[in-house]
View (cartoon, rainbow, N blue to C red):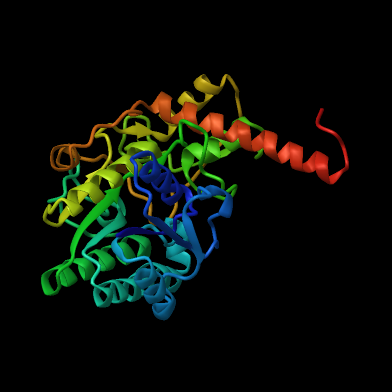
Length: 341
């Protein structure tokens, strides 16, 4: 039986693929349309198919050919302000495509489904830390698109023999500690990525959106989780479901909040580099503070994080970013016919 990873060429999906292989799984199949992911992010020994996850016939063929019993669904769009400007893109990529994939999975007899969700389903929660029992009321089409997919899985789980683990991510950051994969997209909107682009001279500086939030320093507060710890939570979720565990909705975070200014100070301290910072108004869809109550993740999945300090997250992301800088320089030199030696 095989594990199908959709969006496995992306930032989080590729880290999960590496984590599966590290855990001894040799039955991994990856599907990605490469709209934002890259082929280089996928380990060579995995079966890889370029496809849209919403294409029923193609996905049915892949699932059948590889005897897939578990789907881990990462594919989708994730930028909150973009979802406000282009909501139909998000309801298409995140909700409609997920609906098609779930339909194919049910028809093929897939037993286990791990879904990449988000803390954006909570919206302006009003109390912290946020538990899985907190009210859900998204403030962006991105959050709604994910919540709708969650509801589909709940209904399908009631109607069919499929158990699921819905993992609600808080803020994902960092890179593989072994340097195999990281945040490759130079247009990423993640704060730590953008701060490191500024620190390494790949952008002109960093813009802070919102300085009038009701927080200690006026900037938004988030619970950052290392991408490798998040990937290990998904591996634990696969093991849990295959072991007969009932369906779960679980927050993925550390329960520690860091403000935008905290992150900037940490990036400057860890990198030893300074960069200009500008201040602007709030962005549509952003919320004040989001911190996880994630004890259920540890208790139910027996999950233990290994890189849960902000300094660790920044250091691994910085190492990856410096490697990206060197790679870009080498490509530029090759293009000019200049030897790097």
